[in-house]
Image (cartoon, rainbow, N blue to C red; front, side):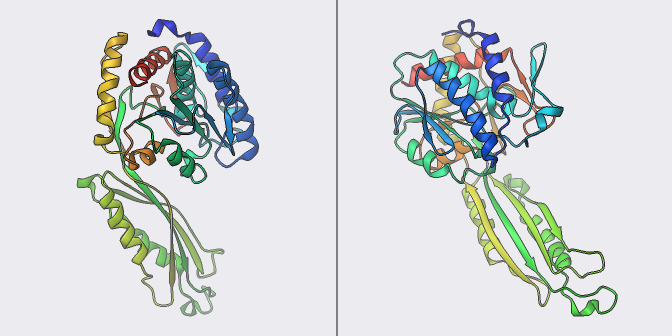
Amino acid sequence: MRAEGFDREAMTADLAALVSAESPSGDAAALAACREVVAELGGRLLGAAPTELGEHLRWGPERPRVLLLGHYDTVWPVGTLARRPFEVAGARATGPGCFDMKAGLVQLFHALGAVPGRADVGVLVTSDEETGSETSRELIESTARDAQAVLVAEPSAGGALKTSRKGLARYDLRIFGKAAHTGLDPERGVNAALELAHQIRAIAALAAPARGTTVTPSVCSAGTTVNTVPASAALAVDVRAYDAAELDRIDRWMRARRAVLPGARLEVHPGPRRGPLQRSASFGLFQQAVRAAEETGLPALREASVGGGSDGNLTAALGVPTLDGLGAVGGGAHADDEWVDLRALPDRAALLAALLRRLS
């Protein structure tokens, strides 16, 4: 089906409904309300209700030959809509989560609904991608393990499909010192804030820009009152790398790290980790997508390499061919100016439908 076979107004209305159902990761009540909207959308376009797996939704077989993957959670807290509701100005739609990745879900369901003979195609929509896929990771891996292709409806990179993504790892550091009065006897204390400063400098130095490896000390805190030597501190660290060996290098360093100041103590708690999505895992599917675009009369496709991770990293790590960035055209992910190009909704649905026909 060519792009003109998809109804842009209907797709915009579905996007409005999804964006208007706020769904921050971890908010059970909000997620439940949005999940109903996702289930209705998929049920209407696919002619079948989903299987509910906790907070996650699945259509089709447990072990599909082709898996369409997406998420309905966002980074935006409940109440964001009050100041930034879904709005359309010309061909531009705005609103929390419209680009990452509710427009991708709209395109996914409209595309699959237009493909006949789709018994070997499955859809998995999860609720916690933005926070590391802790509850969905095992489900994603078990569903994708036997697939011949995984297509991820995450946003495009300026229209380009994502043929490689950095892997990521996160760490939480907890620092323990000793409290004391800053005026009476500060020498009795062990300053956790000062230890935090030592750790931030050392951790930031792990980055290797020439290899594309970033190590970012991010959220941090220390102390309780201005006249007390801080007895505790905390630090979150975000690591991104194109090479799994780089993630391993930093992991070994982090796990072996000790406090610098006498009397201070350091705990390192590893968090979510996703290996890189390498171009070798996606390029064959990208070539199929290029041919699908040609057959459908769409503009020539481009590919991109990006720093952000997705659930496509998890499926690529299984050795399953994975192509990402098949979702919305727009920009501003996780930012107040998030937007979607509504003109591209039919084109992207047509591309996905054509690719599915080639694969299944």
